[in-house]
Image (cartoon, rainbow over all chains, first blue to last red; front, side):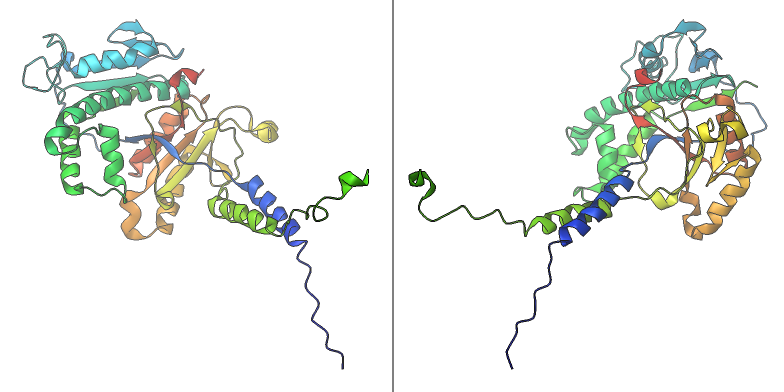
Length: 203
Length: 159
């Protein structure tokens, strides 16, 4: 009997099959990453007694139905909003805030803990303008927190890390450092510049 | 002429394509792993606004999506051009949100319920009236953690 070698399977079409699959996955892939501005809604139950807040501790931002901004009763452009919010939050009028670098104007907010930003919008306000304003206000808080983190970080052993980087490292599993201590620093900064943003919608 | 043709040892061997499948497979595996199949078919226009102070949503399984925007061109005749809400694969009313949240919560493990986040994917041309209604409805069912979906970018692009 003649000994025959088993014929080799032709693998030439393997590449074609793989290409076909590759193209399918290339087309269906959406490399999307969900991201956005995180917010917390106030709970439903309204407290009975009205809390009295001094007018100077409230920073009112009003967006009307034509997407115009009215900040503290004055018309303002979106690009100036962040600086105005920073100035208001960082004012430190009553002098109890040692880390504030504001102008200590008596007619503006007492300290960052008391300062409240009140955002009011109309029903016809466009969503993009609303998000822009939200973004600028969150940006103002982040700017102050970053500055504070850069001051506080080196004392606590976290140099060259702004607030955003701190939070990123804190939630990063691969980051090797003293997480407990970092968490404390983050909480301290959050307490020093709390985000107090109240929202109202005109009916 | 033959002087030129004959060099040391005949022709160059052809380039071997035997490793081509390997390369293609490597790419294939990359895309297979990276692919996230879309969960919902969008029936609305959904151009998200730009923002630069955004955070990433890490845990995908803890996110509930509420879409809103104008009906896309296929559905314009049926549903008009006013911005609407989409839950799962269908158009919905504001009043359906409570049931949707309840259903989403029921499908998750009980201990995870406090960590659920609602992602609002709203078209940038929608108006705040609709978004305000959604927010009010979410407050009613105590789903307070929300996230306004946005794309990384300067806010000046929101024109």
